[in-house]
Image (cartoon, rainbow, N blue to C red):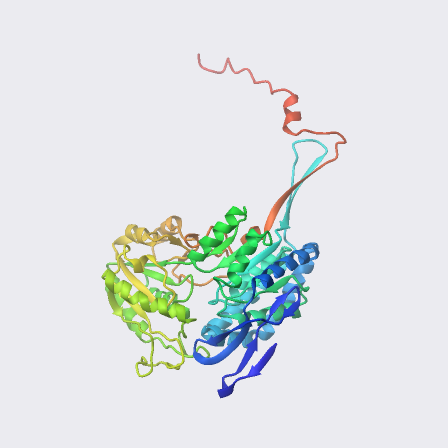
Length: 532
């Protein structure tokens, strides 16, 4: 990788590249990614892709598909094994770069890299388990089979909050199943993408199986990649991002009779019933609300609390949130770091007025952290970083905008209910359906919540956040179109089923037509057994 020294001891700037069928392209235009913890730190310089470059990447990927799809799956899986070992060896350096480039606390960045390692290791084994079936035929001398076949060129558009874990969820199973990939990484993490693709190259992935086109969304590489669907250059899209953009991608895919994988936003409910272990519930709510500064699609949006324990939960949550340590993501002692980018910060700042105008009570008045206004224990650079303190709204009703709209940032609502019935109604009271959680000791309440919640993922006595490489991840409603990432379930997203019949009879057999020619079965005479 190319780097150049920066003044002021800020580290080196990584120069990311567009890689099209193995060729590195000199950029016509570039953009900078600056660290959200220190805006003086230029972490990465990346190319701004043109439409021609994006379309060329897709066309070249189609050429690479022919040979890669014919490579035996166990051999494709060997690349994943080498990738996993390389990520293990590079884990600390990768984690530190993730923290520097997009602001995730170092311990969370390590977890994110580990998720990519787990995913590679899991799918390496799946290279020997891409099973079809043998099916008994209804005719003699005939054999029936089913096979998984790759789809073709897969466009991947990923977000910056999990810049290595989420791309691994998409790229690894897509490549394992014989597809090729054109990846548009987040412009919040182009450097992480450069490092990840370099690991693939070192793992022995053939040129052209992954192409990378950097840039932004609207009016840039992201939009051009969506245009490539109508141009017949893309066979499958996998997108992680906002519901608004997901709708547009879904419309384009729909008219091309394609099924995209859409992992979108969330307004995730966390329910605390009166019988819950409250210390555990508050700890889980705190982590769900403010981990990664609330910049997760699975972050808790509404904490729904039984009125009998609302006072205790409210007081403990406000107290503990006010003591959270905020600061430099590379500092091991912080709870969360900066906002990932300015637009997230601006949206979060605007949400305060929305909540107040709706009549919500500000229990903790989160603000942008500025010089001279740093909260106790602040461990960052308020002048140069995009930092924000926690915000908690009380007296929130489900009809309020802040209860219905996703807000990427350190903010959460407290919603009071009377018992399980109202709690489930409130939890299902938004158009989203990604993640959910309930804290209770009542087994019947656990069962009912699991059965009636409309979210794609549910935790019992745990946070709304967190994922494992072998468990399906995804949502319903405004949170997605029912497709899933991770585990064996994602294989259906990147393969098509082929049914094959082999007729060895030496004559034309017409299935049900030939069967019907043998005559109908003779019905038994039951007249003496039936009542008159």
